[in-house]
Length: 480
Image (tube, rainbow, N blue to C red; front, side, top):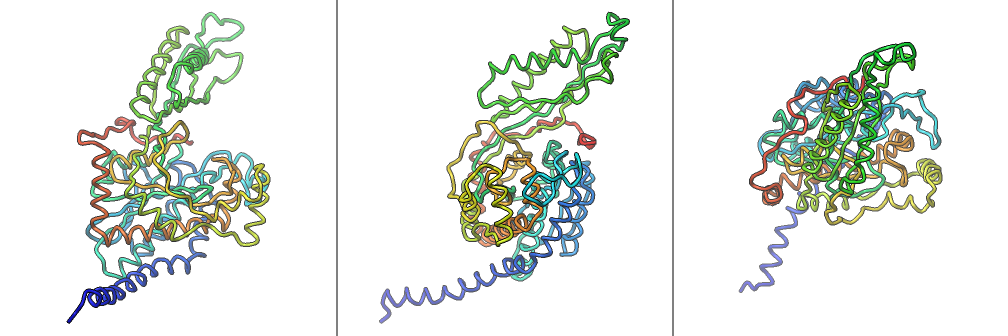
């Protein structure tokens, strides 16, 4: 007679080969990434060594494309009117998983890989946001996923989206607006960080606007009455904006720089431009703020007898988190673990953390994985064009410890750390999380359904995507 205990033991015995097979299959991409550390170290450092600004990333984008082609991906370039954008595809059938890759640098933040301020080039550019490892990690993860698909013969497609100009140009928004994410089931995203954690914040929506005032040139001493100063228009506008700050929602952020104030003090400025970033956690409130600034600009122009032209340079949505997807990534991030410094890396990081005014124990943070937090609405802070992606495809974002704890965003400390093997260790861990998460999604159809169900519920049945960019073409010269 077969009893219940015998049935259970038999069932467990049958399960073990499947469990072992799953472990063996997962080992394929993980072993690949461990064995190819030097490959991805070389790629990320090549991008770090030749920092390129938004929409100008010809060499950086080309290096990632070249590696993907060598690994059997089909690469299409120049999407949505952006020469450095690309989409690389491998596999067939559903689910289709997209990985986001960034590679643009920031202006004026050149730095050597040393724990003290030392520009490589005076006033040169640098990867202060870590996009040298960002793009490389996404490519490494995609290749690791490809290895698993090829090894198992499993159905599924992986796409790498090479997205230019995240730092103000909004490359992803053009790709979303022009339909390049249609047919994608899930998007995996990451960003270099000072810790290892899944991102459950909504971030802030942003509108980037240039206001150009035009007046009449005249000799500022001999005939000032004949002139009308465009710079006066800019200054009157800035003053009005600074007055209205008292009356805007608390989580709003408004900041600006005058990019053109005239040519010489003895010439009444004929043209002057001020560039504004306007932010709020809710894009509908953001649009109200942008309208208010537009009215202030018109009033400043009227009061100074100048004219004003408004150009929307870029605009991003806030993020739409997905808890079900975040829980999958959290599990895999915990499986991979944190970053572990060797003796040389530790000595470097200790100098950075001391310079940041923190105790050495702050470095313990990089080896830990933070627990999955509750969703946290933004109270101000940074923005990303990933937001637009997240409202069109279920998206998850996470970070790994690329930078030394305590380092501020967009700092020389970040450039220094990201260009070392610390950055490479971070990107390899990231690629492993991508690979393990993709395997979960490919092998568990109900998981994909759960993620999509939450996405549809949170977005709402009546949602219709409208880009904050309108119908403008990419601002390819915004960094020139």
